[in-house]
Image 1 (cartoon, rainbow, N blue to C red):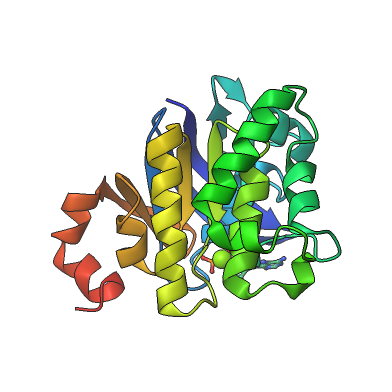
Image 2: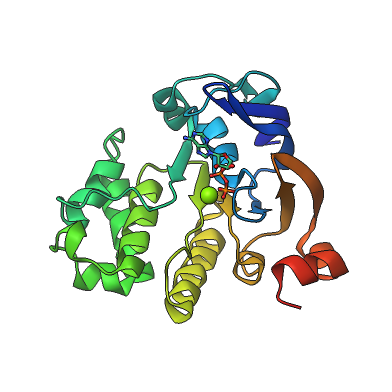
Length: 236
Ligand SMILES: Nc1ncnc2c1ncn2[C@@H]1O[C@H](COP(=O)(O)OP(=O)(O)O)[C@@H](O)[C@H]1O
Ligand SMILES: [Mg+2]
C-alpha cells in the first residue's frame, strides 16, 4: 500500500475534529474522499501532510511512519498537497510558480519536459505563462496550483476540492485535465471533493467521511449504486 491511515484522530489545539479515519491508497490508484462541509476532509489531508496534530492512529507512506512528521519531510518523501484555496503564489508568474514547485529537483531535462507536458495539459497556462498569479482566473489559479505541485515530481498528488468556487464548465475542464494527468503519468492521487460526480470521473474508489469518521469505503461503481450515496452526493 502506498498510503495507509488507520484509526487517525486529529485536533486543533484542544478541539478534536477527527475521531477515527481509516483509508488506503494503493500504488498507482486514485482515491476520493467524499463528505459534507465540515466532515473533516481537509483535516484528513492536513494530518497526512503534517500540518495538524495527530494524537492517535497511524499514517504510513511507502512503509515510513509519517505521523507527526514535519511538512517538509512529508513533501520530500513524495507527497505534494494542493490545498483548499489553491495556495498559489500571487506575486510570481505562472512560469515562476511552476519552477518553484521543482526547487528540490536536479534533473534539468526532466523539469523542462514536465513543464512542456503541463503547458500542453493546460493551454490556459501556456497563454498566461508570463502573467502574475494574481491576474489569473480562479480556474487558471487552480491549474497553476496543480502544475506547481506536479513539478515536485511527487508519488502522491493530494488535491483538496479542485472544483471549489469554479463555474461548472471550468470545474469540468479542470477534472478532464486531472484525469489526463493521471492516465499519462500513472501518478497516484488522493482527491477531496464535495461534488461526487466530478470525483467519480477520476477516482477508482472513495471513502465517505461523516463528522470525523470514515463510515464507508467502496469502488466508484459500488458507491454509484448505493442509494444513500446517490441521494447525499449525486443529486438524486
Ligand atoms: N483551524 C481550525 N481550528 C479549529 N477547528 C477547525 C479548524 N479548521 C477546521 N476546524 C473544524 O474542524 C471540522 C472539520 O473541518 P474540515 O476538515 O475543514 O472539514 P471539510 O474539509 O470536510 O469541510 C469543522 O467542524 C471545522 O469547523
Ligand atoms: Mg475542506
